Figure 1 (spheres, helix red, strand yellow):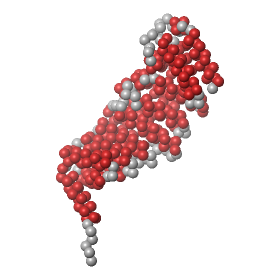
Figure 2: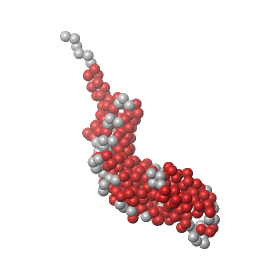
Figure 3: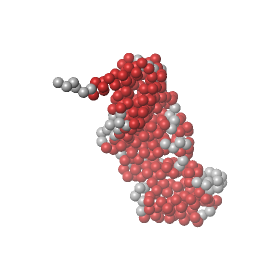
Figure 4: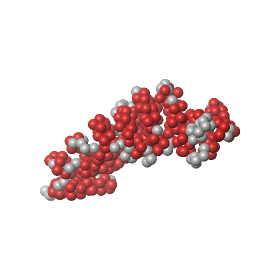
Length: 360
């Protein structure tokens, strides 16, 4: 704490005591100043440290506000970090620190930098950021360390930013295959379960934000689908729900065979979690809309309709409504007769069970 105090006091004195035109390191005032970059690096290390960040938050923010004033045309901290992002990230050298506490402190500083920068800034500099996620994820996944959890939570927050999506598409394949995909694979233990959940959220945010185009998904789908199918049976409700939501988007965008797409989705209509049952209905809806109606026939469509008819009586109103919507869609697009037949059979079965026995 004493070191952080001395460091910030020095930065504060420098910013307030030296005019911008005197400590600029280049003749072109539009170019980033190494001095300012080093100040931002110091702030990233102090504010990234969870042990002291609350103590020095006010002082750090005051320094940042003063730096904003020193830069003409800069009115927000986002703009300040946008200008200095590459220089600060280069100085942090996150990928070079891989051991113990030093490694985690480097990740904390990296986390602060990305969270202080807007989604568009992160996206346009992702050519520098992606290798850090790739190298650090590979390193930290070996032990499912706290660094892996921190990085994946940061990634999920980053890809959730609406300004991130379009600029991200060229690098999406490497992000899915090298960073998110390996973190989704099942491993035993509480930390591994937490990592799967955060990684599932990151994948869903990436897909929902349209950061991954259909061409990229088509390349990643063959190995993503079996992982997501496994995780749709995870012990954690949230992981199951997120896996089904991601499956639904993949079904919508990627031309796969019906047998690959079916994957026993109706099994999840019986899940104990209402949110998972709703996600299963949504996943089935994407499937029904993605596959040509003539491909639905025989036992497959029979099973789907039977299950949907049963869950019209689900105690959850949203689930029952979702099932009713899917049955209406099947009636219109695929086979009105099978829906009517299965509903009649179901009601007859219930009536038979409820009929009172004849008196002796």
